[in-house]
Length: 437
Ligand code: CMC
Image (tube, rainbow, N blue to C red; front, side, top):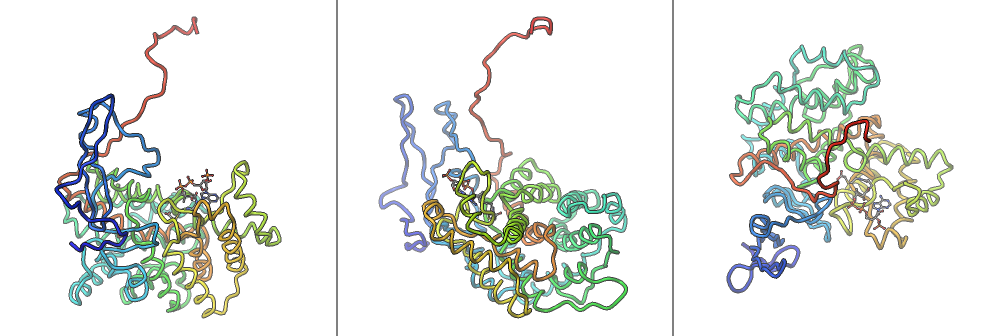
């Protein structure tokens, strides 16, 4: 292991293993120190309750490591994000999303033969069982595509057995997800489903199923396919975020792959997580309709009583900048330029960012644009409607969820996830009959 780590922390103590000492009620407990490959330090508290009777309290898990993982490294202070050691900037510039799926799930970039095999399998498993089309009929018109996506992914477990080879189920999930996502959109707008086409790449196939209609030929704009590839790569993993932790949590009970990922999709839906990309565009649209008075909204975000937050701002982990947002800000300007689109929402977004980045409230709290701030502007330019934004995020995050589910399943240290609590309710009391209450 290299002695020079990214975050400057010492990789190991000079003499013997490091320990932390905890004193509770006069009794001392030694806590082993666990050091990650980039020097992050964790205190192993696995014996804490058995030896002291106490537990830790960490609402929101901001200080809690739930597992050891070799998939993704983030240094939030320095804006670093790496998948299996590869910087996100390099993958965003050079890689194909299918390669990144292989990298995240299997640990290495595929060689030419592995890539050809993996791509071919992903292409050949995109069809849904015809019966599944009937499920879509049952939804009301205008149903949110995230509701359909999560239900359909859970339903895959009704068709594909856990006893099948895991790699086959992984391929099925990645391949069928784009078909389910596109069908959810078609159902939402009342158009006929378009079947997958095997001559198209993963991203182009999805865009074709979304935008083509049977009545006329349709060619996918290569700029859209390229930018979708970029967006999916940027969303592909983000270590122990809310939805990934949900996937691990559900998977720890030995629930099957499809059920665990469906739970992750539901967790992603919330506006504080993946749902933020939809919320950002809705916020920018509100500001536009309000005469583009963005300063008013910055002031509202600073007023705790307003209940308003700048959507697409802030992050639990990034405290200087979100490297994905930096890439997307540049990409948004480029894509809109290439397409000759002038979107007033992009101008509002930039102005909002400029004001917030120089405002003491945001600076002191280290609040910066996150990945969701600019992604919506790009999706709009691609003709993707707002209610599909979080579905796009889910498609990107699939390989990350799968990689974590697989890592969790193969880790001999995995136990069912079962946090404790500090009980603050009533102490024991006797039941009273209704007449006495
Ligand atoms: N606008 C205004 N104030 C904010 C914002 C915001 N977007 N985000 C955080 N703050 C304030 C918050 O009020 C608090 O202030 P104080 O210390 O005075 O009480 C301080 O900053 C810390 O906020 P927090 O809520 O304790 O931070 P957190 O780490 O629990 O939450 C977050 C992180 C991303 C949920 C939050 O910043 C937020 O709600 N952002 C808006 C939603 C959003 O864009 N979510 C997408 C996240 S990135 C993609 C993903 O991971 O899914």
